[in-house]
Length: 358
Ligand code: SF4
Image (tube, rainbow, N blue to C red; front, side):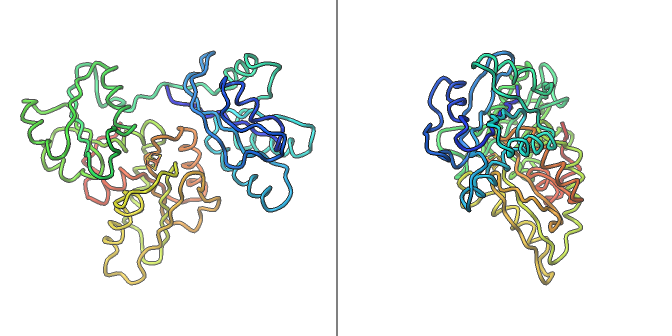
């Protein structure tokens, strides 16, 4: 089940951190009588009862403070709204509470108010959660008994001793769906294909090695990528595929926004910050003026998207579908095409018509 985001809003020192700690049953946020102890939003992954399931609780910095620091806290708090599935608002009787309730409701976020105890607040959250349909990452691309080959580079960008989240999620889902999952690296791809005998029913690859994998597998074998699967599960894959067409329309002087849903420490060969901009520049080679590429990490998604000719979003592996959809809607409202890393790479490598969409 997709993790939901439950965020706690209220004036500074209204008791948000105390409530988050009570719900978690442990001290997640520092609690103090000094107003404004929480500055950046504090996030905690939890498993909650009453059918809520996996959730991320966000203790926001709050609002209502004076001065530059107060304005900064409000800005950070406002950024949390986008990915929030349910807001818990702690009212103190201050007029700012009404303003924030309006802000949340206008953004389409259900708002609940804390009850007398932990159980009542959890029940209110469970009732307020919008209905969630279970979306498979692999969608209709597999069925029970499918044999699926996963190509997972374990290069300098891969974390030491771990498999990244989208790959873990896909493997688990394939097992749940009664499929056979065979994992390999690009280097062992030929050996794995040989060992499989007959061609696999589906190949899922890291988008960065699309071309190499496409050349190695039979033409009729369906091919997709982890990033494309994420686009289908968390966003609107049709909009993201349409958005990639804007790559052909880019002209010198245009601005492109590379948006990341988290603030990870970028690798030297980072896909969003290095590889995709390099491919875009290569496409524009010879045209004076080039492109201007901006990077927005984590919650720093710009309010005004109108200066951009294209937004290329990461796969959003650790973000909620609510966040991804809110960004897609913002882009559509601003009239700016939006795509994601995997789909942009397929387009830039000239194989977008070859990839299977979940
Ligand atoms: S959320 Fe986006 S930027 Fe962060 S690790 Fe996942 S895909 Fe990469």
